[in-house]
Length: 272
Length: 251
Ligand SMILES: Nc1ncnc2c1ncn2[C@@H]1O[C@H](COP(=O)(O)OP(=O)(O)O)[C@@H](O)[C@H]1O
Ligand SMILES: [Mg+2]
Image (tube, rainbow over all chains, first blue to last red; front, side):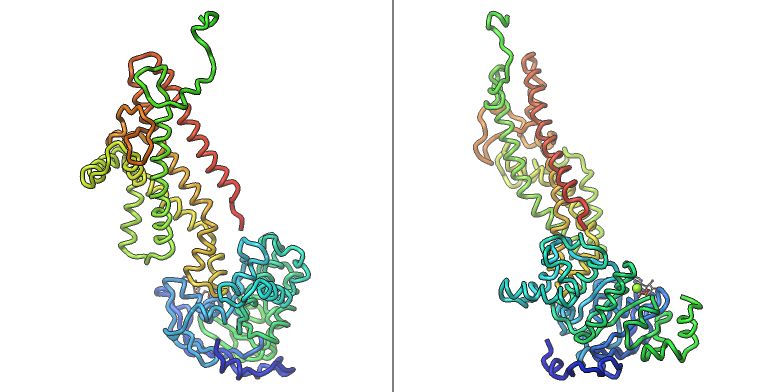
């Protein structure tokens, strides 16, 4: 990974809760097309390092599309075309010489529906480190698995049954397993696409708590359709509407004094 | 007659352990059985790797364009071609053009491989397609390459379906008669085949041969041979069902 970027990264401090951090990700004039459909129009956005950025907006406005641009997951959709520039630590991720596989190791992703591999809990976590050669021995791999599960607050619940299948866990545990799987390859950024939409309130609360802890170490971007959730977990919010970013700023300000009429209408529940 | 010891009822092991004969009482199924096994082995060795490879390529790697569309349509059409046409093809290509040995298990295996290849490709593609995209996305999301996602995740999950399709295809091949007639596997062969190139016949062909003979005793032989064939078909289909049940939807 990028050595200069690691060196330049500031240590987390109390001020990390403020949205004043250097931008980790800088998107400029991003346009996305699905065949003829223009799904994102001139989207520009700075995403601060070691903080949580929330994307809110009505369904179909392009939140997931933009999120999937950040780890180039859209490459897997044949009809999808992305133009514009997205830089992570000043490196253009759409540079043709960039290795997409390395990018996806740096930018982890958690999906809407928990999607553990139909393998053991251990294997779920160990897979990423193994393909990237992060562990030289079984003991090292065990350590990575334990640390990832601990960081995802799942260790205590599963430490006695690491060989059980991951799909046998409850929905909330599965989603935390997916978060642990993402953490295990030591990403710098974690993208989450409505990670709680399939979960009950208690599981949701656990994940939110976890997100709050994770922002000490990771840059997190979360799509959510719950405005309360955005308010609870994020420091900055971007409001998407019909493929454009209408407004972005500190979460508190977006929710208390939005500048744009459309943002106001959305957060007061007039459409969405 | 039984009292005089002229006839006895009991299991005729000789039937399963001897080759064919002009004498009904000495004729056995072993030659045809071994011939079928050799033929099936050749078929499996050819069509499993090619079939699964083609399915993986078409489903996961091939670009979606006019060429692959044409290939796809043709595979579907090939699955519907009458089997005797494959026999003619085998006769023309393998025997006349390549000069491979007549009546042999190799040629039989090649012809049957052509016959079941479309079945295996179609079944394998369906099995690959049935793996939920979320699994693939999960793999890509932790930085697996496309190949790794396919070979570490999609393919293992599709394997039960691929196996089921293969077994059904093989069962189909085992019962196939017409193409084998055309490549000369219909001869009267007494010796149990010892190699893939020696002259041999196969179970369904043996049934066809015996059913044509005028002696009454061969009627019983025909029935017994049919039972043997059915036994193998049941076992293979049973295996396919067990596989399908065991590995059904684990995600
Ligand atoms: N794979 C796709 N193919 C074609 N159109 C798509 C695809 N994915 C999303 N879209 C379209 O792009 C727009 C934005 O979708 P999305 O980013 O999923 O919205 P959101 O996540 O905000 O609900 C929608 O109009 C949707 O129909
Ligand atoms: Mg979405």
